[in-house]
Image (cartoon, rainbow, N blue to C red; front, side, top):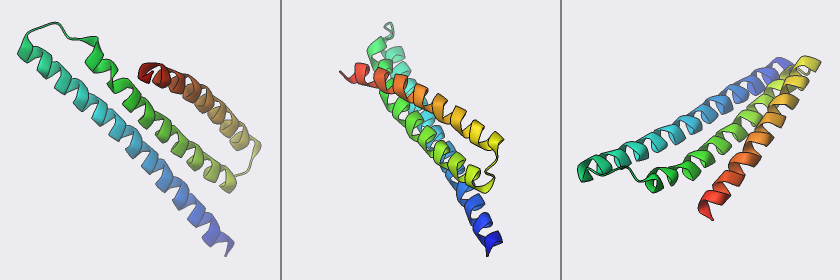
Length: 115
């Protein structure tokens, strides 16, 4: 029974990690697509690129990054449950701290861009 529980937690952790990578890649793809469309419009007009079009993409991409990082934290928590050693706990604490700092400043930038 214990082996089944460990296997289930490992598969859940791996699945959530893959999901977080998909979220990050989706945000990247949408941001890149928006950037390419913006540049194509500017090329057709033969004018200098306006910074407004590209800066509108930043909050959208930032939200995907924040969501992907949240999913990575969940995956790390599950992985730590499998191997509750000091190295794993310290790694989780550092990752959580970095994610919090990145999330704070990215959220602040998103709010400034929208407001």
